[in-house]
Each structure stands twice: as structure tokens, then as C-alpha cells.
Length: 116
Ligand code: HEC
Picture 1 (cartoon, rainbow, N blue to C red):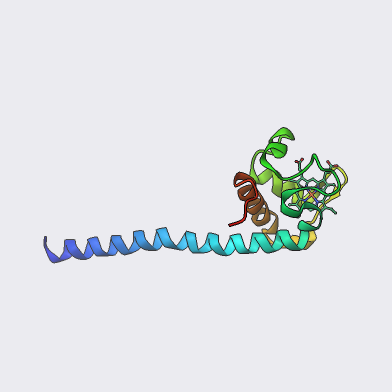
Picture 2: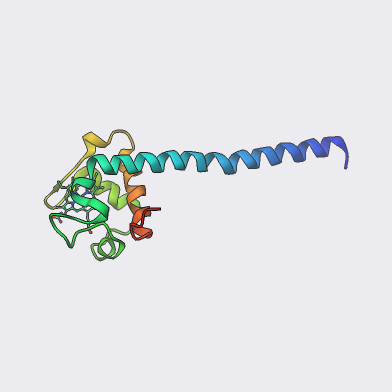
């Protein structure tokens, strides 16, 4: 293999490595942020994905699906605007906070709210 080809190989390897590792770092930070947003804004009523006011309207996957909430965007919308007797938290969640907390909630729901 000539030197140029080897360099090219090395560069593309580095790029791939960067590409693969960077989003993971970011999503770890987002997961932490999602968790703390949830703790500060949602856990009061939705502790461990439950609902202390309306038990059937909890954040477990079966309940979400039953109520037609089947993606993170639907949760983000509820976080922002509220639903039924729940008010919205747009002001408290900050930029993208709705999406970040929704992604976290969705992930917890997929994992049956079992914390590692
Ligand atoms: C003050 C209590 C309270 C807080 C705080 C709260 N919620 Fe709720 N939430 C409710 C109640 C009550 C309902 C049911 C509303 C209804 O249908 O009338 C609900 C419903 C929901 C639902 C629909 C669940 C289902 O199965 O239908 C989602 C999703 C949700 N909340 C997400 C959030 C998120 C995310 C936050 C934080 C940003 C949050 N909630 C904060 C009380 C709260």
C-alpha cells in the first residue's frame, strides 16, 4: 500500500471514529439533562413514571400508547402545552427542554422505567 493511500485510510478512520463517538457523548449529556428536567418539572406528579393525580394517565408505555402518545414529539408537545388538567411547562423547560425531557421520558417508557 502506498503512503498516500495509507494516509487517506488513516484520515477516514479518524473521521469515522469521531463521527461515532461524538453523538454518543452528546446524547449522554442530553440524557443527564433530560433526567434533571424531569426531576425538576415532572416528577412531582409523575414520580417513577406514574401519575399521582390521574393514575391511568401515567408515563408507562401501555398507558401512553392507549392514549395515542406514541412518539417523543407527542410527549414534547404535552410538556410544552399541557393536556387536560395538566398545565404546560414551556416557560420552565427552556430551549429544547421539551424535546430533551420528552426523549428521556420516551426512553424510560421503553425500558419500563427501570433505572440502571
Ligand atoms: C402538577 C402535576 C403534574 C406535573 C408537574 C406534570 N404533569 Fe403530566 N400529567 C398530569 C396530569 C393530571 C395528567 C392527566 C391530564 C388529563 O388527561 O387530564 C398528566 C398527563 C401527562 C401525559 C399523558 C400521559 C398519558 O398516559 O395519557 C404526559 C405524557 C405527561 N403528563 C408528561 C409530563 C411531563 C413531561 C411533565 C414535565 C414537563 C409533566 N407531565 C408534569 C400532571 C402533571
